[in-house]
Image (cartoon, rainbow, N blue to C red; front, side, top):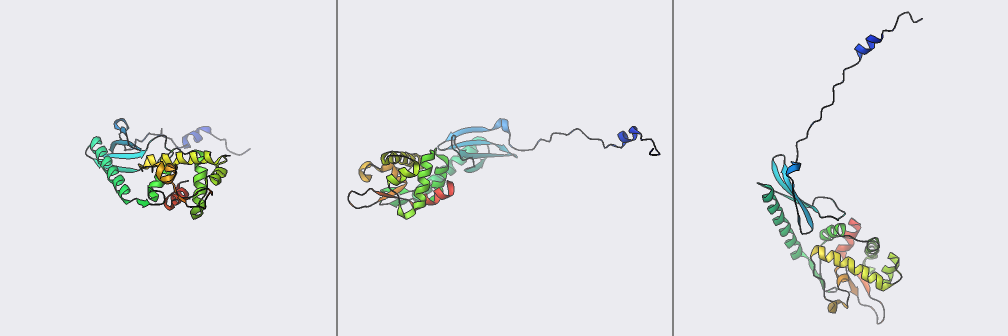
Length: 222
């Protein structure tokens, strides 16, 4: 009907020959030789990468953030780790020295970068996140514990105060900020790490104004 008979053998001969895929091993870190250890807030991992010994600091579990914090090099894994620890210590010392003093909260105030790191890594509850976000939006107007309770869905202002104090304590511990004594803050020491209390009329609840550095950090990190 078509004039010529189709020969299946010609089709077989005409097919291209496929080679079996080969696995290409990428040059990189010596996984078997990776050294890990905890240091302060960080998990340090060190190993040889492309012939160079490198140590890197990452957020320590159960932190939500996963990015690298810092890195250093050395002649061996241990030398790289020692160099990285020295780098972290120098950075922390410089940060502490450059913190401003807030008279209204009787505490040191961390800079925005420090707060961003802390907020991303401490384990904050959904209620704490909600309060921090609302507090940041309120800016200079500030919020009372009652208003913060409404934001987080609590019925009691005292409950909101306790939850916010816990958030302040977590951030203070992470950043190694000394929490003011209760005698200096009317029992609200840990909250003072996050905000300062604004004077109000007699019998009116205290209005808490979040530190500007933390407001910026919350907007960035949360």
